[in-house]
Image (tube, rainbow, N blue to C red):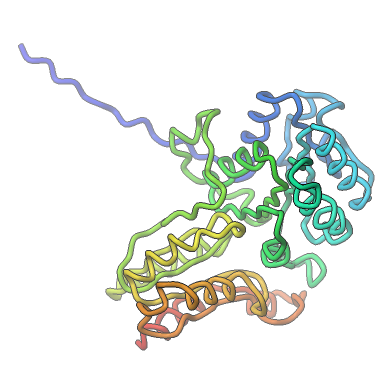
Length: 341
């Protein structure tokens, strides 16, 4: 009698972005006793956004440290600790507050390895929510991807999914250079299927490598952080009209994976960039310049188009806020514009 084996595919685990970052930090804290987390409300309160939930109870006061509301102070402490051989994770409650500490991030952390002739590394992670949230107005709604991506000596990553978040935070903690991890508050509670390989404690996503989230032939769309989801929504809508979009999730702002973008543009002959930040000197502007200067330029059949946040401080009123950040309809309009449809 023949025996028929039936393979039952294990359903992928649903993990929120918040849980994925927590898992990544937990695994690295467990793996290396030199790793520690400091920031406002990260310990006893479990984090302002509950990203560090349970870590204080597990690792105690020496490794999960509540700080005063003094970004310049605790960022400086973290940089000094990194220079002394520890591996700090410095959390900003939002990256808007990193402006209080930007001298420590740029002048102390980013430039020291170069200024010491390679003798003094600064293995530190600066992380927290970046970009527009909802209803918090101009001073709490800025995207810092272009700010920090501008600076040599820093690595800058910007995760979208739970897989991105876990793999990139682990790679950032293990990196011997200062890494800025730009999370997104509105993504923290969003669940994603986490592939089985991403559930491993050895799972890493290489810094500097983009991911093609959807294959397509008519137009290349490049985005980072939350707008990646908007681009995939736009691609689904347009596929019903016979337009196949290739969606690239940048994952890393600096160093930028321009090769993946070039390869896609050479195939699709059209480029649209999407970001939540301001247009002038933005991430999309850099991508467009790099494409123009490189081998993919001659493959373009139309000018590249940028979709960005509005060139204004973020308004407080909801209807104005909605019109100040890229929506799915804006991406669809830009794609049709570049395809001359």
